[in-house]
Image (cartoon, rainbow, N blue to C red; front, side, top):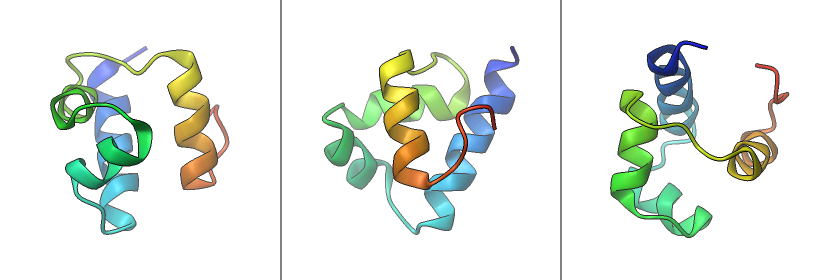
Length: 63
């Protein structure tokens, strides 16, 4: 699993929706720093958050 590739994908999804990291963080009840770490590949979201992100962006979890 390539964390940086996943991070870039998450960042692209957020940018397509024209959301800031702050806006996404507020929606998910996490900090902006957490979103930043996901997008840079430093950390990955928990599975429950991945499911929530997939639902929010209307993408399949396997993407």
